[in-house]
Image 1 (cartoon, one colour):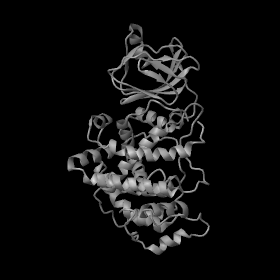
Image 2 (cartoon, one colour):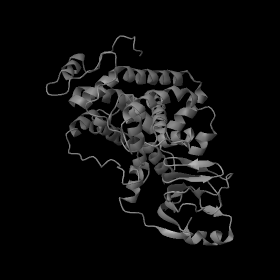
Image 3 (cartoon, helix red, strand yellow):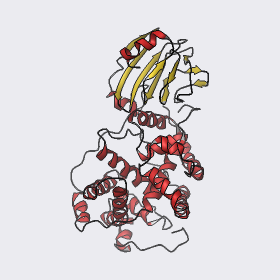
Image 4 (cartoon, chains in turn green, orange):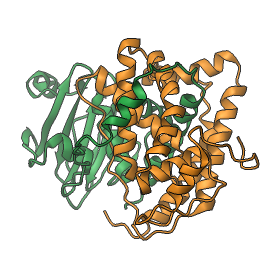
Amino acid sequence: MSVTHHHIPDSMLAAYAAGTLPQAFAVVVATHVSMCSMCRAALGAHEAVGGAVLEIQDQVAVSDGLKSNVLDLLDAPFTAPPAPTRNGIYPGPVADVMKTRAPRWKTLGMGVRQDILFGQKDGSLRLLYIPPGQAVPDHGHNGIELTLVLQGSFSDETGQFGVGDVEIADETLEHTPVADAGEPCICLAATDAPLRFRALAPRLLQPLFRI
Amino acid sequence: MTALDPPETPPDGEPALRRAMRAPGGKPAACPATYSRETQWMIAVRDQRDRVAFAALFDHFAPRLKGFVIRSGIPAAKAEEVVQDVMLTIWRKADQFDPHRAQVAAWVYQIARNRQIDVMRRDGRPMPEELREDPGTEPDASQILAVEQEARQLKSALTRLNAEQRDVIEKAYLGELSHQQISDQTGLPLGTIKSRIRLGLNRLRHELKDLKP
C-alpha cells in the first residue's frame, strides 16, 4: 500500500456513494479507493450517512406476498459475478474496464501514448503513457479532469503525484505535467469534457486523437 | 436505541435467534447481546444462514427500502422489485458484511444504491476491490460497538436538523444531486463525519498492515 498524498475530494466521494458521478469519474474513485485507506474510510463514512438516511425514511408497507416470495427465492441458484481483481499495475476497477486485455496504446507523439477505454457523452476515460522527462502538452480544461497515477510519477506546477495520487484539474488550472525520472508514468485520466491544448498543432490534432 | 436500552425482542421471537446462536456445525457465534438487533440478525444470517434472522431483517428494512426507492425516482410499481433484489443480495452477499467497517444500514444502503443504479443506467457502478478479512481474525467487539454508536449518533443528528438541511442531505444521498450540486452545498455534514472516518481508518490500518499491493 503506497502512501497517498493527493486524495479524492469529499464532495466527490459523497457523489460516488450516492451513485451520481459520471461513469469515468466513478472508475477513478473506485480505483483510488482500492489503493487508499484514507479514502476507503471516508467512503465508509459517507455510506454511514447514507445508512442513516435509509433508517429515517418514511416506511411504505410492502405487499403481502413479497416476504414469502423473497424467502422462497433464498435457495434459488445464484452465481456471484467475480469481484474486481488487480491485473499487474491495473487495480480491479481499471482491470474490469480493460476486460483483462493489455493496453492498446496509440501514439500521440513525443513518446506519449494513450488508450481510450471509453468515451461517453458525460465523459471519457483513458490510460496515458508518458516517458520519463516528457511533458504532456500544456492544456487547460473545459470541465473537470481527474488523473490518477498507476505507475511512476509526474510533477507539475501544483506538486508531485506518485502511485495512487489523484490530480483534480478544472477550468482554472493550466498546467504542464512532466513525467519524473525512472519508470514511464502511466496514468488513468477521466474528463467530463474534451481537453483544449494551448499549442496550435495539438489543438488541430485534438479531434483526431479525441483527447 | 442506545447501548444502555434494554434489548428489544425481534418480531419473530427471541428463541429462534438463540437457537441460531448455538446452531450446530457453524462457527460459535460470539455475538454479545449489546450489539444492535440488526447486527445480531445480520451476523446470524452471515454465519448460520439463519432464515428467521433474515425474516427479521426483511421486516425492518423492506418498508424503509421501499420508501427510499420510491423517493429516489423509481416508480412504485417497480419499487418492490428493487426491494426484493436488495433483500436477496443481502442474503447472497452476507459473507461480505463486516460489522467492524459498516453498520448494517450503511451496508444495505450501498447495496440499494447499486441496485437502483443498475435499474436506471446501462452501466453499473464500478466498485472498489474488496477487502477480505483473514478468516481467523477474532471479532473486535469494541470496534463493532463504536461503529454502531457512530451510526446511532449520525441518525439522531439527522433527525435534529431543520427540515431544509435534512432535505439537502437526503437528496444528496438519495442520488438527487449532481457532484457539482453537492460541492456547492455548504450545509452538508462533512465535518460531523470526520470521527467516523477516523474510526474506519483505525480498522483499515489494522487490516492492511500486512497487505502488499
